[in-house]
Structure formats: structure tokens, C-alpha cells
Length: 436
Image 1 (cartoon, rainbow, N blue to C red):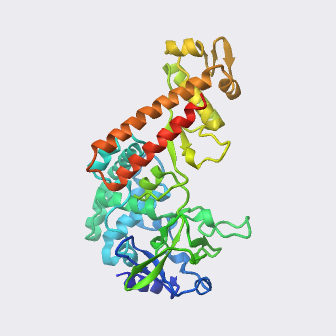
Image 2 (tube, rainbow, N blue to C red):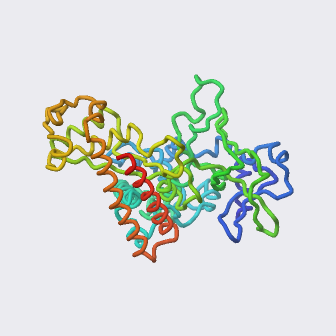
Image 3 (tube, rainbow, N blue to C red):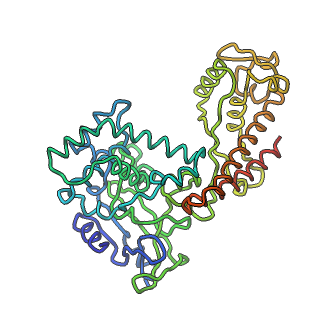
């Protein structure tokens, strides 16, 4: 089947290096491989793959479809994002079947979802209360709201055109999973010698690229991709000399991979459905909860907006920090201090000071706090905030370890996520306690 895909890709204008092939090894994922006897010079002589601009599927391409445009017009809350446009494009082109000019590409995509949007009930139960579990639940609610807006439009289109493929919510979720795990950011690697020239694909950033999305991730990549000024995207080899080899299709092969970027484990599992081994960029997404009366919470939200602070802190794995680095940087400490203010707590009043409100400011222990520097300088507030943070981390740690023990039916990836992240949270907790 992959041979047919390569032929179809070439017939559509794509170029594939004669030395590479798509293979599904007996032990491993389908990917792009090269024979062991091929030298780096031979691979570097020409791109591994060239995807012409005509095969780069962007939001602009999706927007040329009448049914995609009609569906987007039904969205009531906000304009359709690139992700929604691409997902609708995949959904409707998949439904067209043989009538779609993209059938050769669609048939090569995974038929079953692989990322967190497709976790079953056992996995979701194990992830209850975790940032990953909450993110999946929120995304699925959003997808259901979107689908309810254009469901009738899709059904009318299907009846009027006579297409046989499904346009169900499950297929819309499948399409979103494909975009989430396979789309690239064109603007991240645009090749440009003139900053005054517009990007070759305009404002479109997210894009699906046939064949390029067959390359797997590695933390030690031996290939990279770039966007040329003509809008084409090329994958080139760097070095394969130290890359691991595998046996497949009766020969010894080296897999060609590029890096999908640096992400914490929560994002890896959410977007791709797997955890890279020994992730040196892991971090725990800690969501702050503003405490206090409704009036104080309103002031806090004003401060967050004014200071441009998100309600989340990424707490890095202490094992990845260099000497002198801390899990809590200045922005994180400011956010923790602001969130921990509590005018309903007698203990806070006794430990830090009485809070008096005078929107948009407040006073603590009789001292007016009207900027961020004064806030973090309030005596005992930083220690109070860090203590509150460690107490919250301890609750999350216990919950995750309990979930790992009580969810033996959860998938191997989810079990690994719970155990790895619990160990990291414990290390973060210990590191923060040393700051108090």
C-alpha cells in the first residue's frame, strides 16, 4: 500500500529520494527508512522529499471547499481556526471517497485515532483531575459544540451530493486528531532571505503535508524540513552515521526522523498519544486557583490581565535544571503570590496580614500594594504562597499515585504518564520546600 502511496504522491507532483522508503517494521511504528549501505553524501545530494506548494494543505486550501465554508458560517461563537478548517476539509474529503482528488493521501492516514482525544473510558477515569484529563474533556466539549452547529449542514450536503462516507461526530473527532498530531507550523521554519517578503502561504500557518507526515519523531533527529520561498516544503538529511538500525522488509535499515519539538509529557500524550523516552523538557502544568472573596478575585483577574500572566505555571523537572536555576522563576512567584492572597482566611491574616480592598489595589497589614514589586516583597507572603503550592502538589501527587494503582486496565501509555509525572511532582515539591 505504501508503494501505491509513493507512486500517487509522485504523480501528484511530489518528489521522493530514490534511496528512501516507507516501511512498517515488525517491532515499531511505520516510518521512513534508508538502506544501511547508503552514505550520508548520497542522501545529502538531493532532498529526501519535496512537497510542492500544490500539495500543501492549508486553511486557504480548505476554505476553497464550498461545504467547508458553509460549515464555518454556522459557527456561532468565533471565526473558524486553521485547525477547524483543516479538520472539516479532512472530514468532507474523506466522505467523498473516490471522488476526492486527495483519496490517495486520506487512505494512507491512520484509520483509528492515536492521541488523547481517543482515550477510552478506562484511560479517562485514570486521568480524572489531571491537567491532561481536563484538557481532553474541555476539547471534546468544544468539538461537540462545533459539530452541533454544522451537523444539519453536513447531513444536507451528504444527501444532496450522494456521498457514501460518514460525516458523524466520531469522524469529525478523527479529523481533529489527525490535524493535532500531523499538522506542522509553516511559519516556524520558513526559509526567507528578505524579511519584507510575505510568507509563501500568506497568513496560513498550520498545514498538512503528504509524505512529510510519515516521518517519526526522534530526540536525536537525522533529518529536518524547511519551507522554500516558492511555497514548497523539503525534507533533507543531516547525519545518519550514529542512528539506530532495524531489520525490516528483509534488510537492515536506518530510520530517518526529525524532531517534533520540545514539549512536556502532558503535551506529548495529548497531541501524539505517546511519551518520548527520557524527555529532558518535561514540566508539570500547575494551574493556580485565585483564593479569596469575589471582590478580591475580581481584582486579581484585573492584575492578571494587566500583567499579561496566564493562570498556569510550567514547573520544570528539577533533574533538567542547571546549577543556580530554580523551579520557581520571578513570573511564577508573582503569580503564586497573587493567587494565594486570601481575605477570607484567618490564618492568612495572622501569618501575612489583614487584607483591605480598594480596587484596583489593596493593602496588606496596612501597607498599600499597587504594583508587582511591592506584592512579592510583602513579608511572609512568598513563603505562604510557596507553601500553598506544595500542599496542592502533594494532593495531586497522592491522587495520581492512587489512580496508577487503582487503574490496572488503563493503557500502558497512561500508566507510564501517571507514574513518571508523579515522580517528577515529588521532586518539584522537594525543590520548592527548600525555598521556604
